[in-house]
Length: 247
Image (cartoon, rainbow, N blue to C red; front, side, top):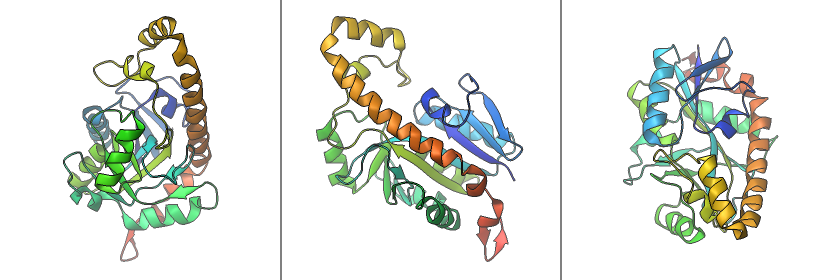
C-alpha cells in the first residue's frame, strides 16, 4: 500500500524532506510514502494526484498550509478537514474523505497539536484580505481555505481511493496578507522572488507586514514538521478499514 502526498509549495515540501524537487517530480520518503510537488492551484494539484496514482499510490493526502477563516483559528493550528466545499458550492466531494482514516488520525494528533475539524473551502485564488476571509466564512461556514485540497479530493473520489486533508493554518482571519504577495505572483499563483524583491525595494513600508507573515508561516511549518514525525503512524494501512477489512 502506497500513500501519495500532494504538496503545492516548496516551503510545505521542506516540512517533509530536505531534498530539492522540481514541479511535477516525485520523491519517495519510504517504500510506502511518496510525495509529489505540484505547484499552486487546482490544475497542478489534479495533475500531481494523477501522477501519484499512476506510480502506484492507492491513498492520497493533501498536505500543506491553509488560510484561517473562523475567529478561533490561529496560525500554527492544524486543520483536519472532515468536510469540503468547492468554489461552486458543491459539497459532494466530502465523500472522498475516509472516515476511519480521519477518525484515527484525529485521535492520535489531538495529543500533539492544536487541532480543528470542520469544513474546508476551495478558492481559485489567494484570499488575501480579512474582509474576504470573513465573507467566505459567513457564506460557507468553512473554518479554513486553500486552493488544492478539493482538486486532490476529486481525483481520489474518481478512483475510489482513501483521502485525507492535513493543513496547517498560516494567516488567521484578521490578518490582511501584504500587498507585496499579490503583486509578486505568476500566472500559476506562485510567488516569484525577483518580483517580490523589486516590489519591496519600491515599497519598503511592506517589510513589517512581510516579517509578520513570515512569523505566521514559520508557526504553520513547525506544526507540519511535528505532524511529519507521525506519518508512519498516520499512513498505517491497518487504520483504513471497511467492515474491519483493510483497504
